[in-house]
Length: 207
Image (cartoon, rainbow, N blue to C red):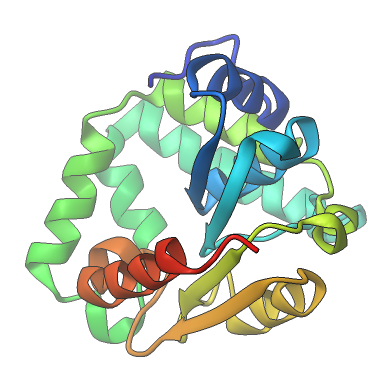
């Protein structure tokens, strides 16, 4: 599904998914998608049979200088997207998302750039606003009672293994998976390993 200007919050995105989704479903979200997944679980937990949370986090944007620094960084990327194009923005964004040993992986880098180039600076701004205003989902973790996969790359410096360990410890039926030699873009960096983890997650009993 495509996001429009009206989807500039995590709540609006979650509500749109729930309008589109079947009555019950397995739910997986990567990065910002994981934050949308948390909001879906907050709104309609009875509809979610299981959840996979990939390279994400449950915290709100921090207050004070840390939060202001995050906003400056995101707005700088938006300025690059508007002035130089989505390709230039993605090249800059990837400096913090791929491990140093993957920065020269031309095939991977071009695949990620191509994904971003199919979108517009306007859409990037919508997603930026949603992330800056993200709600704190940490209090929700203890009441997630469906089977949960919590997965990230061992070398993800943005959505760190430590953050995922904290989340997994709070979710009752969770399994923590850390993919070796992998950064933030786990589904593209290590698709075989992520697929295996998700197959195991889908095969876990619901009770």
